[in-house]
Amino acid sequence: MNDSYSIVFVQGAGLTLGGTNVWALELAQRLTQAGRRVGFIEHEPDAGPLLLDGAVPPDVNRTQCNLAASGWPSFRKLRESISAYEECLPCIFVPADSVSAFAMCALIARQKTESMRVLVVGHAESDLYYSFMNYYERMTHKFVAVNSTMVGCLEEQMPDRTDDIVLRPCPVDVPGTLNRTYSEVRNPLRIVCAGRVSNYDKGSGKLMPIAARLTELGVDFELSIYGSGPYDACLRRDFEAADEEVKRRVRILGQVEPAAMPGIWSSADIVLAPSNFESTGLSMLEGMARGCVPVVTDCNGPRDIIRGGYNGWIREKDDINGIAENIAKLARDRSLLARMGAEAHATARDKYSYATYVPWFTEMCNDLWGRAPMLWPVDRKPLMPEPGRRSLPRRALSKAVRMIGIGT
Image 1: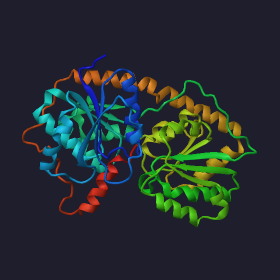
Image 2: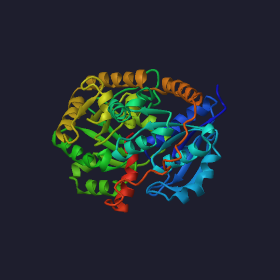
Image 3: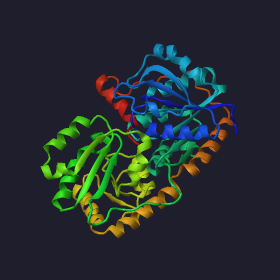
Image 4: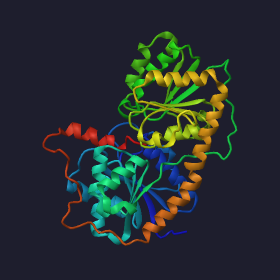
């Protein structure tokens, strides 16, 4: 075991609900259990409660940084905040979510490069996030892409770094054997949608229309929605505007502790994810790990994982009727539901389990630490210039920056 350095995850948006943070928290717990030194640098969130604050493993070293999650900080503000990063050295930084996180790493890579390495795990696929990875390529030792489309984009944009770009989707906790039952045909089909409640990326605005179409098709179902996010109030309005029969079948349950989700997945039949953007689909994989059949939309992450009609169903993003018809088919044929659930579990177990991810991640970090440092050029500004500064209003820019965490 190499304990000469720490692995430090930079939480650019604070510990708000999102796949990137869930991944970092779970991985941190497993790394500390393996005896590795792990740290979190937590920037100030600009929206939403710290829903995951209580989930930080006790052995993780937490450092607060007063840089905001969104917007472009001044260089003076970066300099004033550098101590939060310096006290984590020596370490491998894993920056995410904000230009501030990348810029701070670049600033240290100019001054104390011997004491740091940088690993970028690409959880998002916005143009802004790709611009981060390109601009800060000179300090980054390795890029981990979570889907094959991202690999292709990075290789096209950085052809001289192809050896440092690897494909590895985010993992989930998967029991070795599947020991569960499914709802019988005389009982409602149990559908769960869980994660950040957002229409822009997660497609939360489709949930009530899907429920309405299922009701029209005569499907006996219960749809439970877990999570919180910017679409909360709109989802409530969608619910109140629905017919009484549809409302009777839908429950909006809000955020629950991460530790409660395995039990929720184990009692559900289907994981529903009608996303507009999904780099991996962490809640989809969590449901699959417990034998839920995924019914999802055609995004880059699910496209790599789901084989339609075998381990799940995948439909076009706006195909409300197709999504409902796939669910109706599972409602009619509960033996098909059980077979596809078993295949979903096997897919998660064989390809997306922490049991194989943690040893791989640890070995990769040891390899990075053995590499030569990457000095940030003195003629290159640590703070990436604001994209479209003259044409994009700051309010719109700040909103765009917050969107870099939309993928996982």
